Length: 113
Length: 498
Image (cartoon, rainbow over all chains, first blue to last red; front, side, top):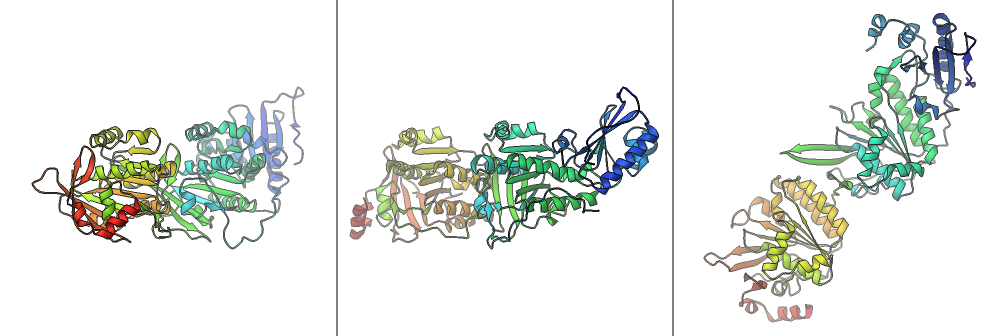
């Protein structure tokens, strides 16, 4: 997780509809799992439409403030608006999809609360 | 949860704590006195209380004072109030937060967790919060940290188990870094804080309380726990005013003040003569009781005026009239108080007794005394406070009297008898606290003739006889029979004392 470089997938012009940023703290097993879960999910649902940026807060602590990051891992959907936050290792794909608004809320969101 | 991957830098733990817990001065008026020096250095302190009890203000003062007065920069982590609101709050206390942030003496970290905006899936921890705090601490080289109110996290995140574990880790982490930390918490119904944070803070726990009794607001501070340090178990009244928090220390049970052998004049030569020929002991307390119109206020004015004539500062608390009314009335009997006011020797503080509770009054008086540093004080009348229970009045008066004694301030309290007969419970409760007790009476059938008797005067051989006196346009004067009641040695002593 040392890289903070964006992963590019899909369209040649590099302009993505989905900009996702994953905040982690160092190379933890949880961070690795979160990224793997996220990539898998994006490939299934957003192939070619997304960009994932990984931010290691140990290297760039000041970035935590702007996105109000408290927990790690935290996934922030920067685009499309509105900004969404999903915390945890993203192991529950259904919930991640709900959190990213990729599934109709009515069906699954009630589980929480 | 795996902890092996934890990579946040952790500085070495400090060496074994010395036997006596080192303390950090908060600079909060009175608080450092009641805790014997402030908060435990390098450790977390929990401050719990309900909404509006002053927790945030306490934390702000702690950090601001650290940065401005004690050379200890600080980080204020706010989970509830926005930084711009905090800046407004501290501006009213006379601190320029923006400037302190610019000059890197204070860092404000605003941590906002909005449950509605967050989806949770799978395991997480709060390492990002540690990283932010670490960054803020480094940016100002902080020694002080305030977390206000960390319990808000429980409203934003659903996994209480993770939060508890992480908060426990956070408090330990702050301790390892040697941060003197204040953690604020909301008062719980059955526990000190709603989330039981007191379980994780073993060194110092303080509860702030705000009660309204008989429409009078009373604030109290209680030191619930203070490891390795002696502290009073009493509740301390405190006040929030334009200067922030002021805690009224209870020094009552110490009785450590040095008794002075020096004497100060009552302001009336004939009264001094009755008191061993030399007046009151400096630093003693005097109760002047009597029915309405017996001359208590006038005698008090003489006492204050005499202090100012010696070039000392005099402070007067009046609860039944305005300062200008008081000055005018005294001018009518030939006592000029305008001059010492102009010279800055006399200060008159007027307040309606019903405006605040008894303790708030005493806290105000405490602050005035601290500010003006008088050597004589008069309170006219102390009976204005009789709304409270006798025990409450007594305990708060003890605090005030003892505080004045430790400062070697001579104090005179007037006390209105509810009727001309003396000896009610409240009176005996108050009089027992005083070193000298003087009772004034009207003479039946004579409009201007009054009588004065010294009921007690600790440490001196006072005159036991009653003295008749009048209030004239040149002040309170003894009736002529006075000289006859004095023995020869007392007259000599009186002359020598002058």
